[in-house]
Image (cartoon, rainbow, N blue to C red; front, side):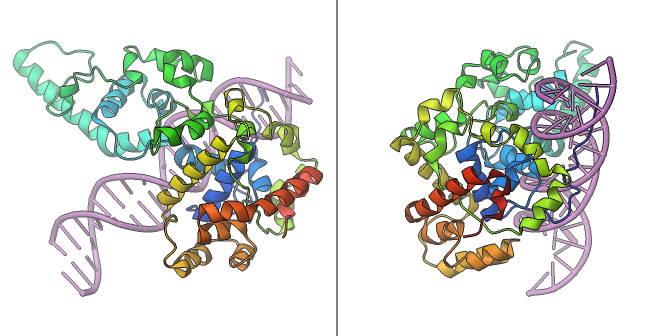
Length: 358
DNA sequence: AATGTCGCCAACCGCATGGCT
DNA sequence: AAGCCATGCGGTTGGCGACAT
């Protein structure tokens, strides 16, 4: 097997470091509309000065609508500790057993909390074994004070996996679906269902790999913002890929219909879901709410964005900026014209979509 | 109140893997 | 069969906030 390595982050001219709210919104908007079948082509098509890898990570670890936020529950911690005892540092496999949690998140939690916790338990076990001279072998998670209340019969979906194999053996979405009924849920379906459920961020089993290309049905969930980027940057980033390596999987795939999410289609419910989710996202990003101080938000835009031209567009031209300044509802209407134009340009000239300038 | 230290978390880096040509 | 490419994965690191001195 050949193992060519696609140059990615080494490219010059790309933003690095923390993501700005504008970048987040742009990425979310694009993925909602077109999906993410081709991460490498995505930033270009979405008008992001990021490498595909960075976009993927950002989406998987932070922007995915099905992510749980907040602290890990005791059950989750127990599950992680138990699975880690069986699987080791197979974070992605462990994450597959914890709906709404990412491998990165689990890894961090392990390194910061659970590792110590497990070490402490082992010490206690040894101490206990020394006195009792006995059992407990092979059970990495024996109860200790706090966690034991749940008696390791975790009510998580993963809990059913008495043997971690169930979760770990396959990353195939189908296989994952077998592991838990929750895995039938599609993130885009949730976008529709969630508002009715009035749940902030529903947990979903979607592992990172199970979230492929689902935007086809959610096309109208959100308007895709447009930004102004130096066209030259993409020739740098693309390198020799003038023929568009992305084109191979590119636009056709990006808009490919999603299996389960087809039901979403372009319904009003879908739009409502999009509004709801974006609203929630904005809240997460600290951008949502009554615009008592629009200037503050403008400052946010200007100060944090790495896009000069975008800053120039803040006041009037850029729909994302408008979005932040006027709120999601007004902006949705204001963006319609922009979206139409963008669609036209994308269809007419997919390879140079990054050069979109309004 | 100012400074230093520690811990957490998001993001990056490089390798591995699998699909496609 | 071999090579190329995109994506996935796990380890590592840098930034930032919280806490202690």
